[in-house]
Length: 421
Image (tube, rainbow, N blue to C red; front, side, top):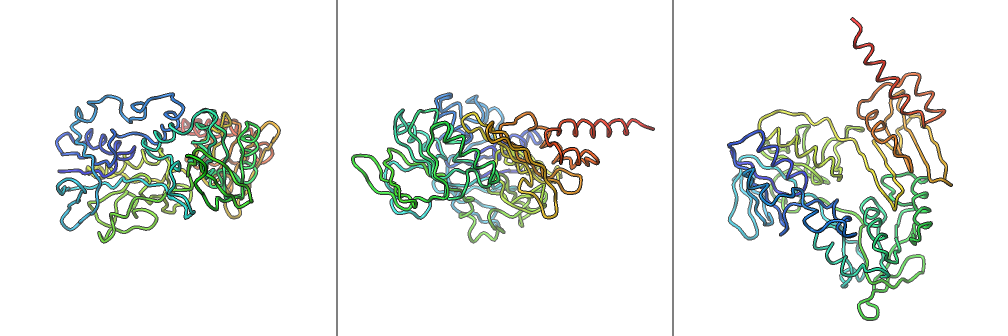
């Protein structure tokens, strides 16, 4: 049996290791299109603040890790898939055949259609090469414009602030991290950034970028302002890497469409990670969830199924945790609420504390927290187990900070009842 994995991010690496642990005799091939060993994009901010060097971003630190596990690594880009012949065509090497294939090609940054986006000094923060370019220009005192204040943008924001640059953030929505936090919480994060000396423009677009004096840029905003910048970082969204699947017959939408075993419409082809349109635990819908915990979960489950160990994917809980210059924010599940549900909220804007709980009947289905980290595990646990809170839901509607009490009361009751014969 020959297992081929396209994509050397967390989903691909975990899948390769899982396959090798299950099946010692089959061939395992991992294909990545970057020159470096497999690494984590989530480690790039630590590289930017020089907490780690490039090797610190590598998913596995030992140079011989893959060879010891008998995992072959090919550095090349796949340009075409032929499922009928069970063949991948690469840009530089000979075609590769497979018996089982995992597509874990991830996503790529989307460049907005703005005049001047091709000028020098404009970069995403997606690859190690991007990180090297940012380090060259983001010197202390440099003027840096960050375009996009979503989850990825705010991770980069933290690193840029620590590099002591003069930072301006541009976000076209009316709040920061709009796909993670509601109006109240997103505005509080903005206020926190302003308090820390970072300029933030919400409900604002970059309309054009022009070459300035020397290597500088002139950034024109929709609010009439014009900024001088030594560096502009674009963090305006991503799209899945599925172009090479055109004409293959593989079913795609926003990503590769899969069933509850992460299997595509071709029974020998699976998908995992950012490129996979997998099951959302909270809604039951099949969506792209571009977060690393989901990639890791997908990689393991897809590999189990590829190796013949039938494993059902129950769905991933949408969960994001963000550190914005010391202010921790988090969201879980249906954080925006559901039709007909109830909610409980605590807000202390002066102390940057916020907690919002969303219920369906007596089950917690979503939550947001800001400046409060003690409930992270409990909130996820309650949502993922769909634990019925009974009378404790009414207590939480009055005081959402009693979430730990509610969890303990109900889990202890379950444990007590389980011991009754």
